[in-house]
Amino acid sequence: MDTDRDREGWFWIITSALVVAIVAALHAFGASGPSSIKTSTVETAMSAPLPAKDAIDVPRPTPQASPARPADASIATVFECRVSGQRIFSDQRCGSKADERPIQAPNRMDAQDTSILSSPDAVLARSRSERANTQEPVVDSARSECDWIEQQKNLINARMREGYGSPEGERLRDRLRVLGARYYDLRCRHFH
Picture 1 (cartoon, rainbow, N blue to C red):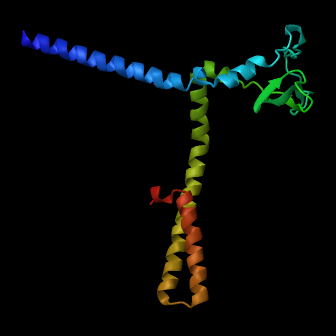
Picture 2 (picture 1 turned 30 degrees about the vertical axis):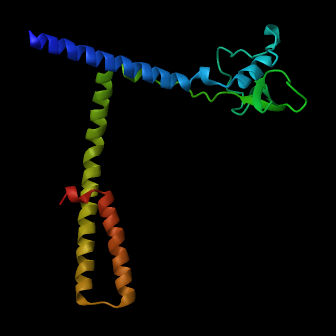
Picture 3 (picture 1 turned 45 degrees about the horizontal axis):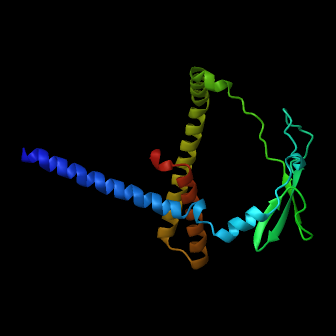
């Protein structure tokens, strides 16, 4: 009996805490939303003249993109004005010092061939055949180059153990660095 009361008590405590957290989150996020805009900014925006509905001349996109149109072609013009320190954009000249801003055509990419997506078995088969045809020569070539690099490194190390002068030592260390980088790029440690 006491366990049921304890459970019910915990239920109400947790529910109350969640409600308080949600209300606090809504209040916090609501403060940074549109309702927190200063009244002067809203009044400035409201006092700006709105263009007539018929005055808006927005070009309609054509059903098919024209390949002859250059990528940097302007498709519309917008005017930027400053009223009481606020930037206002309009499709009509909004003042004597209005800056004219061209609107560029969007970058449209050519459609990609998606027919391979409908037949994953064909893609998998083609991928396997390509790997089977190219894998072995690449592996054999890499393995032989790795063997050659290993041999060169051994020769340089043997030469360095015999003793060397400063210029020759620098040249040998540089050669070892180049060979080591190529050894790493080919992932030769997998072969040895």
